[in-house]
Image (cartoon, rainbow, N blue to C red; front, side, top):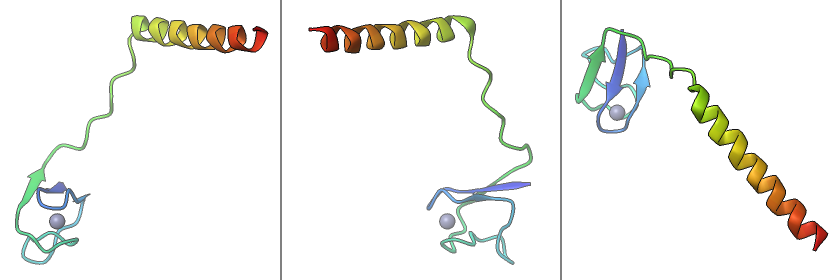
Length: 67
Ligand SMILES: [Zn+2]
């Protein structure tokens, strides 16, 4: 069980004795039965774009150093 406070964005597995937020004492907590899902791995085209951007940046820096 995970808790998410809507007032102070507290996230944790514990709540107060009467279900209040342990961080700010608000009762505006939402319970989550599922654990927070991990981000899916980046797709291949994203990796290609990232590499292309880095290549462009490095080429830009080298170009400035040469001139
Ligand atoms: Zn809170």
